[in-house]
Image (cartoon, rainbow over all chains, first blue to last red; front, side, top):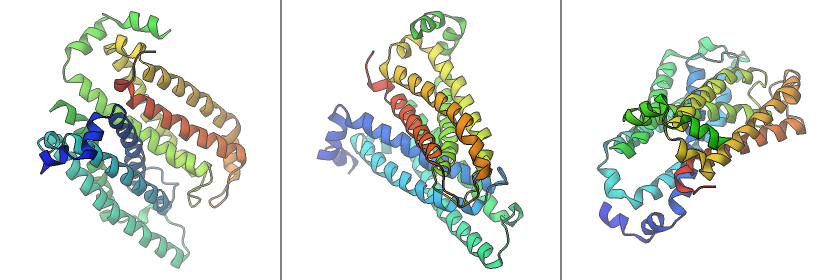
Length: 161
Length: 162
């Protein structure tokens, strides 16, 4: 199936066009900065850094991060098609994909918890203080940070394995 | 100038050590990528708030992200200098690298403009407030310049000499 994927017109275009591969890589690094950059700031806030910032305010940047994820899913799938057989047999690539899927699942959990914080705060009329971030939310944030760090490390190592 | 720096780096002890240490390059690349996410992640949130988005964020509190941005820049300055020393003839003549250095210089000037003209306005803004025109321009210029740094940097292996 992966060998067939490499022979599809879209894969041939990515592999053979002079500019397709570098342009997709360029889109992929902008998407990386948006997704991992925003999620890392959010996770560090939930872990207690920059206490003056309202953690619930990371709901809106979180939505921008999902747009970055779509950019990288599309560019990533296109890059994948050109060398599908090589990639599915590359251990760092498989680790990267697992880390990203876990990181996105955890992002869904964190977004829903932030939404609950916003509702709780607007109902009580209180100003949000860091103590209101639950221990389990901190644990999810730490795991999310670990996922994105793993994705970056594994992603860089694809070329070396 | 890049040419003189490249000749100074070539065959220096540090150059030889980086060339001979096979595991060093991927480690430097990983640190460079972690640095770029801290730099760009922090700037995205700061600049978009200063440009008037994400208004729930308190504009003054957002400066709390700056140490992380500077930490990311420092990581990338150190790893970037080591890349250059490790392979000076590849980078100094590369048009992608030259454009990237030029854009980082412009981003630095834009950051000075921010400190000089925009930062003094920030304490007057509250969460929910929009931003003056100059603040929006400087913030969007910052994002555009750093996006250009990412793009020109990523294209270094694919573009020719200049």
